[in-house]
Image 1 (tube, rainbow, N blue to C red):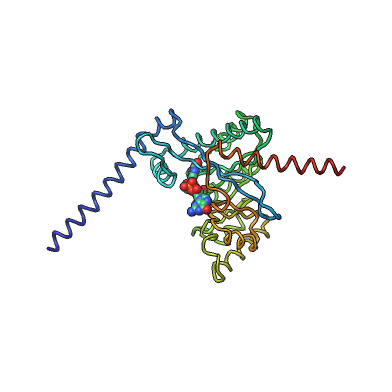
Image 2: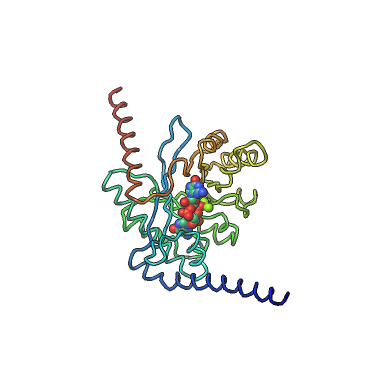
Length: 294
Ligand code: C2E
Ligand code: MG
Ligand code: MG
Ligand code: MG
């Protein structure tokens, strides 16, 4: 009967909802243990400067994963929205930033060399009046400079409370941090926003890479956006570039930096170190050539 179908559907719906709630409740409950036991791990995805003949390593993005003892590896797409809704995101992000700072220092000590590491900031972090002191403390603790750490702020954060967030971003920029506007083009931005917001790097959402391969509206939009960025003096990073063909399209459109599976997925710190040593070897050989020429 209709009624039976109706109640059955409700029951199914309730059940999945209930499961999701239980799952989220478990994530919240396990949070502090996860921090204490270092279950959150940072992966690093290389960024390559593609403006020259050969791609050159120019940075990394730190991306958090939760290695949960019972639930396995959980992706940030799952737990970050949950933490944002439950007042835990700041604590987690502070942990991640500190960990990234510690890792940058470790690479500097071990290799005498590193590339800037970008960390992500949730829109909720941006309301914290102490955020500036939090990041300063990371620099101090690890004897780093602002240039070592880039800050990725999602486009949607800018759209929320322009006044307060713009002021915070200004202060961070004044301290020397490079600001990357993350996920650009996911629906919140307007041209007006672009010209009034402070940022140094425009980070195009992966739909630009994935939809622009053929001629058409998407490719046209990509060209317009890179052109605007250039006029504003911002660098353009494209994330989610997976194929050689997408890479060629991005280069042609004037994208400066590419991050994506075409080069590497996010990898654990030990593995990222091979990118750093390769880049260092390359740099050393160039310096050697120069010295010989002189
Ligand atoms: P995001 O900052 O836009 O990061 C890029 C996402 O794209 C990452 O997903 C990365 O693994 C993925 N990706 C990179 N290259 C490719 C590619 O070629 N193809 C495809 N299909 N995907 C690619 P991930 O690591 O799952 O992170 C998802 C989101 O979670 C991030 O998006 C960011 O918004 C958030 N996030 C990650 N770590 C943190 C963190 O420490 N703090 C905060 N607040 N958010 C974080
Ligand atoms: Mg990001
Ligand atoms: Mg992004
Ligand atoms: Mg994204």
